[in-house]
Amino acid sequence: MKQKQNSNLIFAYLILIILILVVICILASVTLLVVKLTNRAPLPSEEPSQSIEETEANQPASKPLHDPVLKETEDAGMAYIDKMIFFGESTTTHLRARGVLSGGTETHQVWADSSGTKTLSSRILSEPILYPPTGESLTLSEALAKETPDYVVLSFGLNNIVHFFGNKDNYVNNYNKLINAITEASPNTRIILQSVYPVSASCSNFSVDGATVCAYTETLNEWLREIASTHENVRFVDTASVLKAADGTLLSAYDNGDGVHLSTEAYNQILLYLRTHAWKD
Image (tube, rainbow, N blue to C red):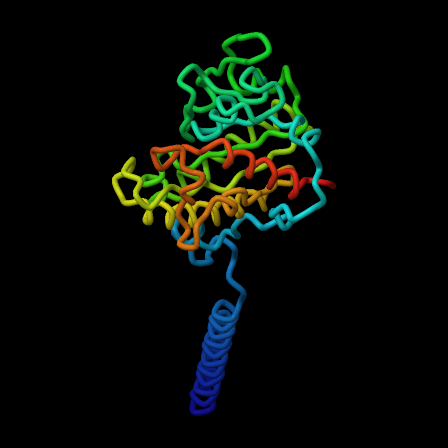
């Protein structure tokens, strides 16, 4: 009887030892699993998400493709100017009125609508112009597809400059849309962005004084360099530099009388600057 009790006790001990070993194995397995889960690399879906603002901030800005500034060259002559179409504000349209281009006041190189001026805006591509060779009312893209000019010279910034100065995105985006539309309509056309012209110190055509307007133009001209640098077929030319006094305002000799519009001699200087800063390549 006593021997049977001893056997039962030994069997119970064995069962207890087995149970303890099983528990130890389970605890070891659980611990190993926790360690693996803690140390594993996170799945893509588990990485912290970025806000829209953070994502946009991390996007690289448009990288410059080239130095956009046209440098001094030998005089390319009027034959070079004759290859250009001019499109811009009233200070551009007055190239025709001053008679400084080939064809004089009947030149076909200045494109405008009946108002004689344009403002850079989202509507500029839908508003028609009068196509000089035929007098047709066409969009800019339609006219370019007909003409396929070697060069288009653009001049925008004075109209609505106070608004543009506080809204870079509006100015840059609308200029880029204009450039892209020109390229789509006439892929081989080279586009030249002119610097924004200064105004006289006494100019009263704006909600700020003339000196402040001229300070604004310097900022716009920096933006124009940036825009030109991101397009293969675009260059920047600083024609405004020949019109400025030491303080950056318009020289009185080039003022046609209202502090904004230019004299015939001013346009002669602008054309000479274009000729001696020619796009050669």
